[in-house]
Length: 431
Image (cartoon, rainbow, N blue to C red; front, side, top):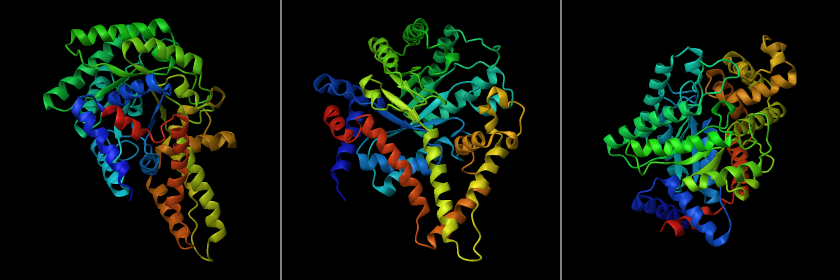
């Protein structure tokens, strides 16, 4: 095995430890310094770990691409109740570390929280949490993240279910609640004597109000004053989430808007992070617009689903007489329907319909998108085992096919974001 990438990665971690900066801030600092000399910007990739296959593929892609990997885990995915992945915060961090050792990846993997705010966990909405209960739940989750070893927290109190239709949360309330959550996290971290961590603030959603430049600056100004007032002179959000044209149903990145936001954030010391970067049609524009980072998640679930569907077709052609088929496609659709999660993506003219009454094309989209919620469903796990066993009997490694397909797509983002081989220049800059 080539030991040079391992040595490079150790240099990055050693430099981060020596200079006292959290790893994400250290990498952004290195990217800025290199840009001043070379004129080439680098955008960091954050993968949402919505399944074990995605997590493994991301680490393998980072190893092979000699690039850092950020994981952005929501509270729906990973939390004290084990989320829909079946992982608590400590489980998630341990899995990242153990699989890294297993595959020989000594690179920079950073576990991060995505969308940490009241009512952003589906359970809090469905069970009718009060504001106080929702905030208490988020605070407990922040503590669990810090104790587990997360190194970046996205603090996002931009949802308030008490508001009426069309009402947008006041930006001053967003700032006040953001400060309350950061203060809670910092008090715990400092009491435990743990290393510094990074923060991310804001949201791409309209309800956060950050599509308005006045609100954008108001949030940052109030955070700056508030953090100084609380005595956190060395705490500042490295990422500010920007509304840059992409969402669940659009895939065109608006480089002009992104560049404007990047220029507005730069004097504060922050960079812009894009969410919903899945299937974006122009990923190469992210570094050109000086985007600091981008989150990608549902796209990888779609690849996992599509690869399993293709493997099921192979299974059908290979099955020996009498062997039981996996029927994994039907099992996945049934599990998504049982979960009820598909209802949150219904279009206005679909309201009140049963799953069976939805147009077949839309039903397929709902299944493909909603699969991330049901990968750990017992019936899905059993069907996947059957599929892999049927394929293995004919010399086909189904799990490897799934991981490779996801890793290949991640490698495409590495290329577009100028991340391939980034470990080398990060080590040089940080050293």
